[in-house]
Length: 263
Image 1 (cartoon, rainbow, N blue to C red):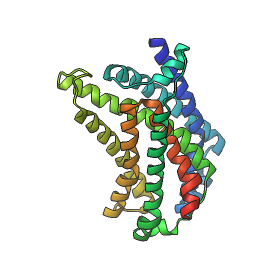
Image 2: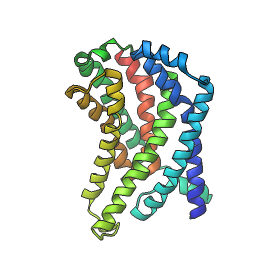
Image 3: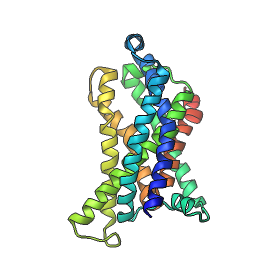
């Protein structure tokens, strides 16, 4: 099992390495759209070419994701979370995809994409001046960063590691077994992971807007937290792969369906 855990970690880290190439360009695109003056200043002051910076970022993300994935897998094994598809792949067994779980992942990802895009378009854009000034268009870089970085790295960090860690701590704290641990504690882990992810976006929100108002905080927690509830549920009930798939599809639906539809 140690060898399989290592192989899974390497595979996940490689996917995150691919996603890491798009993170810096995507962040720069966002900065150019919201703060063009700061963007110009940053680009002129960059000591190395963007391509080199992207490679460095990708390598850092790959290393971090490998460590987080390996620890997270060990915790997942102890807390009853599943990685059935990845296990079967490296055990050279038949990989059986649960079509009902795929459909559920598509539905959850679609709902998340709709809520995020529609909330901005029909509510927050009217309440937050900066959003009203931003032009929303299909972004290939945003799509690739969302699918490979958001869909994989964020699921490694928040579901595979954070959720597994909190469930493991509760097993130890309350001296329970996986079979006897009430569902309530899994929901606590799901909510904690979602809130942590949302809170992690507050510094960037303040940087872009210059302040943190109540409406900005509400937007940050709603738009960044809702997906975590769905993805956490899928991780708990179906396995990591379906949480990743739902997260990936969220970004696909946003970029290909709802942004063109609403804007």
